[in-house]
Structures are given as C-alpha cells and as structure tokens.
Image (cartoon, rainbow, N blue to C red):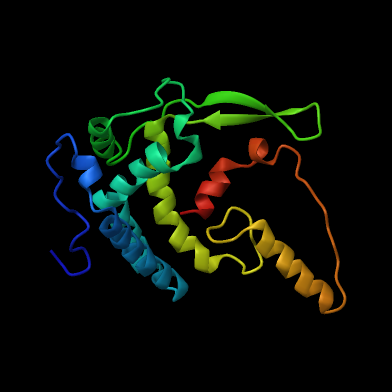
Length: 206
C-alpha cells in the first residue's frame, strides 16, 4: 500500500456491545480532515486529476463512512426525522451495519414529502426527507465534494458553505458600504430548486 493511501482502508473493529462508543473519534476526524485537506490543496493548485483521485479514495474510506453515520444518527438536528422507511433511532450494532451498507453505489429510496409553512405567508414549501441510509451516503459524498469546490468558489459567496454565516455576509456588506459606491439587488428565483436542470448541474459537478 502506498503512502498516499495508507490508513484510509482500516480493518473493521469487532462489533461488541460498546464497540461504537469505544471508537477513537478524534482519530477518525483527524484522518478524514487530513484527506480533505489534500483534496483542497490539489484543487486550489489546479491539480485536477490528483484531486479526483483523492476524492475517489475518500469515498472508499472506512473512516469517512464511520463519521458520516455518526453525523446523521447522533450529531445532526434532523436525526429523529424519519424517511419513507419510518426508521428513526438505530442501535450501535445497526450503525456498524449501516457503515457497510453505504459502501459503493446503490439506488436511493424515494423522499418523504413534508410541507412546511413559509414565514409570514400562507404558502408552504415542500421538503424532501431522505432515509437515514441515504442521508449517510449523501454525507459521504458531501465530504468528498466540499473540499474540492471550496477553493474554487468566490470569496464573497456565503450561502450553504462551511464556516460561513449570515453574520459574515453582513460584515462584508458593512465594509462595502463604507468603501463608497454600492448597489443592492434583492432577487428571488421562483421555485428555483424545483425547476433547476439537474442534468446540466451534474455535468458541472463532473
């Protein structure tokens, strides 16, 4: 095994009653971050082929799958929201099983459609809720995509990006206003997520 891939295909631990709790999560997070950092650096320096190779390595990583399952079943706020299969809570043993289930490719289950009210309006907007398994797989893919695209995005974009918030955007606006001339454009694309061309979007994501 080369030095580039060493450590990312760790053998699975024996599943005992306390095995999940006994995982060294600090080490898991460190290993995942280390690989994400290399993807980021490769993308930032224009080494596209290297970045893609590292992304594929990350997608196969046992550490990444462990962390993804932990996030969707323990850490995330929506962990108690069921998809179409009705599954909410899973045991430590089932978490290990899920780590194996999200290896490779599989067909996702349909989303559970929930309608939530829009603030200050009579309208409601649709929310699609995936199953726990699909959420875990999405998290794995997100962890591979995010470090690749972060160095390529504009420095002045703030929506849905790690380590950025509304307060950061407000701070940027404050600086722009104090530098002199400025324009404010308030726009909303009607039903943007419903009408976006997914084939074109996927082509841009390679």
